[in-house]
Image (cartoon, rainbow, N blue to C red; front, side, top):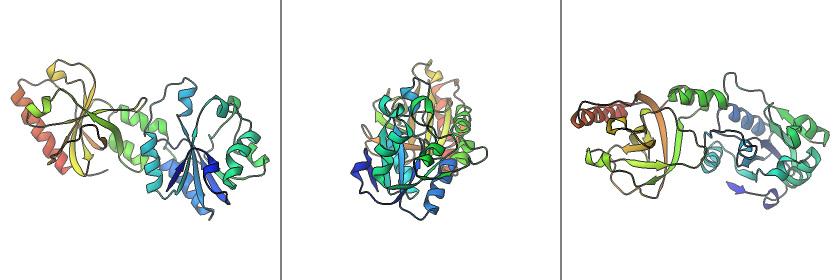
Length: 287
């Protein structure tokens, strides 16, 4: 798999190019990729960083980091990925400029995208205009009910099972482990405390079962209301794990919402509940 920032860094050959944000690499995106694969030509994905909404000053909650998006695309069989910097120059291009700068150097013969794909000044460019530039195009209809908005709504409600059904894989948190308050260790359940890149969506507060580093995990998202509340944190207890994770990247699958945050009568009651959560996490099934 090869990832480049400029099409000229790939050898020019006849290709099908799939274009889109591919945030989450959900079932709709996979339909786009399947359509590209079916053309029989080598497939390159052309995607953008940062997300176009960031440049436009619109709110956005990302379902994947760029690093994880690239990994998911590769896992699905994509061998060439072009990550374009989405800036004002790119946002202002005409269809001809876009074709000459980005598609012709790839040797694009066929361009595949969803019906909502737009580019250029005032988002006026679309697949029909690329067709006028001499390219073959394939408009891929959405998978019914599947959209990034529907996935975000499910995650805001804590419905990670529903989100997984739309994604085609469990929702993941992709962060870096930093020192925390060490409360988990004092309670007998050490946790990895995660920080995230800007704009990454963190689901509804609560306790989740999941997986990280090939270990079952109990994941706390919230403000630790038992200890009086405070900064929102994501704390991951890896079951039967021993080792140092500080400074490392950690990708955490969320499988099931176990319960909401709550205040307990005592620390002993909290410890008993955590033990129960860990046992449930051991037995949880991947959605």
